[in-house]
Image (cartoon, rainbow over all chains, first blue to last red; front, side, top):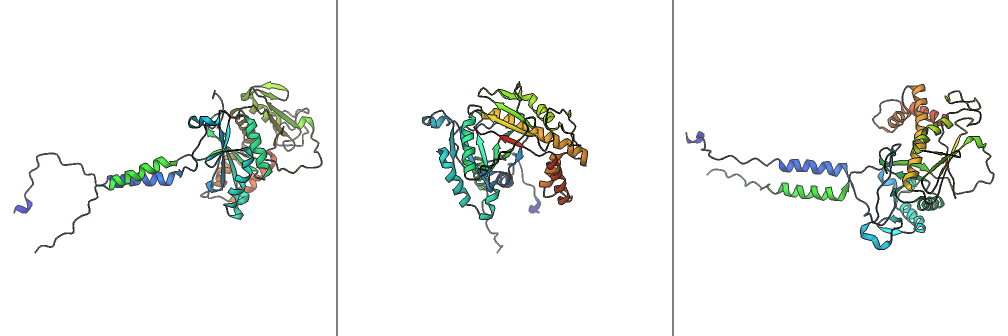
Length: 158
Length: 196
């Protein structure tokens, strides 16, 4: 009856790690579902202002992003004035029109009226730049805009 | 001869592979959901005839380059702006508005439908302050709409809008849309920005 003979166990059995891949996969799937790919590499400081009367910006594929702010530490050679960033490079105000046209061309025609422009502007930028951007957007008839903000009270943030 | 079991594939490195993928996704993605204040810009074409608006129906808000606020020719702190805007919009000076609960001051706005908030800013105004002011003005409208919705339908306006956007909401969407539009016509958002 040697079949049922108990093994002599002297030392501690190793912890079973067979389910570790399952746990990690679970985490992986969570992150894959809950996150979106980073679209642009920011070359500017982008510390968004706070507001609490916000609306969610759904339909990510119908949003065009315009970034603005001071060049970040790695791009000091571009000066300290707030600049506009479109896609992955600095741009001039005049380039907004062609940017919008390119974005529109890449979308299906019936979706074009629903396109929204999200302005992601650093809180220390001044309104002159934003006024110029808005003027350019009006010229190309991209009238739906969204000032992207963080959620929080506007008071006591200095 | 005993049947030999197929050798098991060694799955010990599976965890490493999964970790590698996990770290890749952690680095390349962002969780942020974009939210912000929605605005609509006025179209470019110039209208020929000038619309004449009575001075008392305009609520002027000026933001200067030092981020100071001038409301109706008086300096004001940001925290008082919301109340002032609510009082102006809900005034109902010509008594045609039966749902207004304001002062009925004949020198202030006639009707929420006619009341216009005009916002002007300098080029040097900081974006942060501009957003704060926009936020407060939108908050004033939302406050009025919420109280009105509460009085009419026993639900706040923001809840109604959230329900309308929610695909799983069980109620009747057409009716809800009507109610939302009703409140929107009672308190239309008339916020104009002055171009310099």
